Amino acid sequence: MVDSVSYPGQRLGLPAEGSGSIVGFGRRLAALVIDWAAALLIASIFVGEDVWTGAGAGLWAPLFVLLVERTLLDGLLGYSIGRRVLSIAVVRLDGRRPVGIPRAFVRSLLLCLAVPALINDQDRRGLHDLTAGTAVVHA
Image (tube, rainbow, N blue to C red; front, side):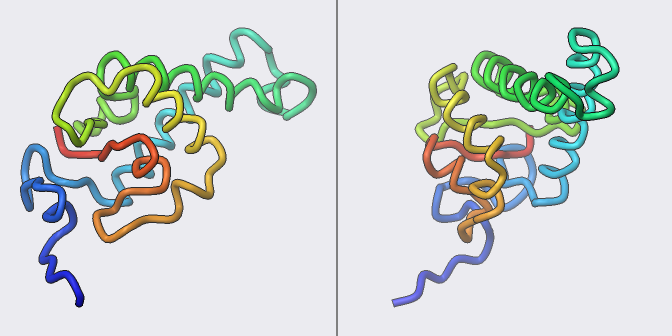
């Protein structure tokens, strides 16, 4: 039997549009680009120009900063820098807020592996969201 779902998030009890509705891939990607730019800038403060050349610690420093940024901000506030700019947030499916550090860490770690974020279900939730029990919604 095939589920008759008319919009992403319907199976989760989320609205079709407006606040609380599932965010599309484009906005999620734009938020990630903003967060990556912030991670590069922050890492360059600590590592210097190696961040821009990819030499030494500059190769992994931005990814580490992204992991820490998203873990702390998503876990404590429900949004990263990029998501705040774009008015989107990470929420728990059980309705409790904030997401919490452990869930945000698992989610962020899987995001840093890239592949889990590229595999999505019909509700536009990547493997990192499925594992953490979260969704990215319009704030």
